[in-house]
Image 1 (cartoon, rainbow, N blue to C red):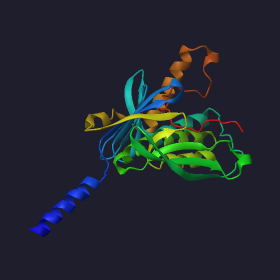
Image 2 (image 1 turned 120 degrees about the horizontal axis):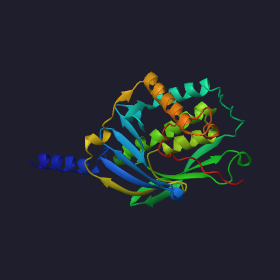
Image 3 (image 1 turned 180 degrees about the vertical axis):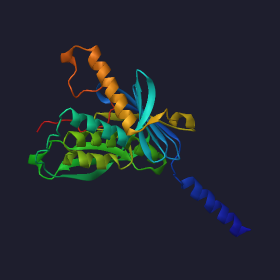
Image 4 (image 1 turned 180 degrees about the horizontal axis):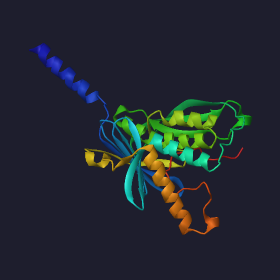
Length: 262
């Protein structure tokens, strides 16, 4: 009987200490009064990130963009969106700009901080050669608490989309690579002055939040974007729309390193 009681107490203790991912809603403020970001992350890994009218959804190990045009709402895989935009850019004669030579950067953990009652590690990206990088480090506070793991993974959709767009334009720089690594450490509590956690709410999230409208394949997506671009050109004076511009929805703002004086 005593052994059974001890086993029960041990099981309860382990349960209390367990920090498996939970349904979590995290609300952020964007720096400079640019708006807010809401992240809804379910324990099963489904997630939704919204900023203004823009939304990204992670479902079934796939990232999706939710898009609305004159014909209504639809969704597309992020990989298909990037591929379609890349094809449209090439068809318009746009060529990626080669990345200039860059210095190397390192990522280090320098301490801890607490925001919104949540403790996080302070991470900094600094140039290995101070003469070849920003004068000040790029800094973020990241929580590695497993209970919030899916919030961090949800925000990484923005990072992946930003990196994909950079690749189309010429490549991802060494600084951006280290920043992406830093933001992948867990749930962001603060990134520079660009993004700051306001509050976190634990509680069940309706699965309907992660429901997708009609998902278009790459060919259908490209046709839809091309048609939308043509309509925008027809509605605007010729000088207002550049040949490569398409009225595609901007992704929810992703954290990017702020430009700093040297």
